[in-house]
Image 1 (cartoon, rainbow, N blue to C red):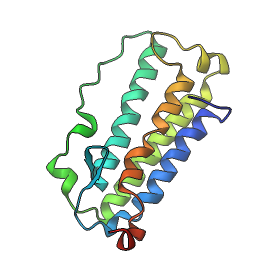
Image 2 (tube, rainbow, N blue to C red):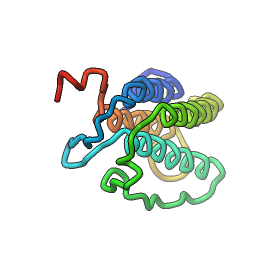
Image 3 (tube, one colour):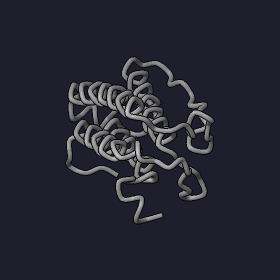
Image 4 (cartoon, one colour):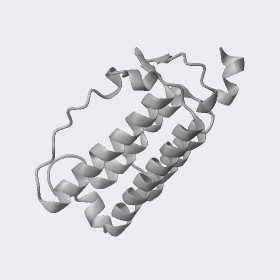
Length: 156
């Protein structure tokens, strides 16, 4: 589940990857993409990546503070909202860049402030913080589901 990469770099590299893909989503034709029995759109992918980062950051912070975690009550990728179906504009891309870049910085600051022992012997129940960082990097799945739309003309 983990390897020798720095957890902060794992998270920020995932965000860079998502934003690279998102830069092509202004070309989206409005048709949701079906992957693994779910549908994805540019807005939904950004929402899911963001929600996943927030959810697990809240878990890390609560555990560090010795507090119980707040249960996740989101419907995750099972839910597609009307907002998910909206066109993905240059303004949406800018908002996503601002939001995810800041979240990436928060994650990087938090993870680099932890000692290797704290990363691997995290307080409370659940995965270690190193495992959580590698887990949230899997959020690239949502963006990969939408894909690089600069190549979509050849694929559809």
